[in-house]
Amino acid sequence: QVQLVESGGGLVQPGGSLRLSCVASGSIFSTMGWYRQAPGKQRVLVADVTTAGTSNYADSVKGRFTISRDIAKNTLWLQMNSLQPEDTAVYYCYAVRWRDGLNYWGKGTLVTVSS
Image (tube, rainbow, N blue to C red; front, side, top):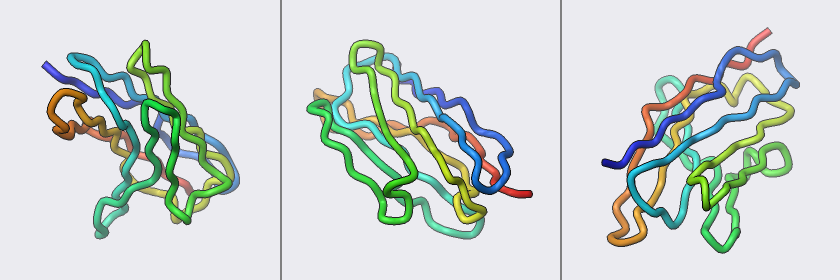
C-alpha cells in the first residue's frame, strides 16, 4: 500500500524558513514533488525532481525554495527560505509510481506565513 506522509509545516514569520519532509512507502517512485493549495485557489505545482536529479520550480519560488530527495530512503524535502504571506497554503507531496505512472498524494501539511 502506497503512503506519503508529510511533515514540517507550521507558522512562520515573513522572511523566515521552513523545511518540509515527505516519506513515501509501498513502492518505487520516479518523479516526486510538491504542490500547494492556497485558500480559495487551485492546487499548483511548487517543485518536482526526477530520479536523475533534474528539478523544476514554479517561477514564484525560484531562488527561495530548494527541492531534494534521497531515492534510497524514498524521502523528499522542500527547503523554503524567505517565506512570504503569499506562500501560505497546504503543501502536498506527490509521487509517481515507477511501474505504471500513477500519481499518489499525501494528506498535506499547512504552512502559514504571518506576522
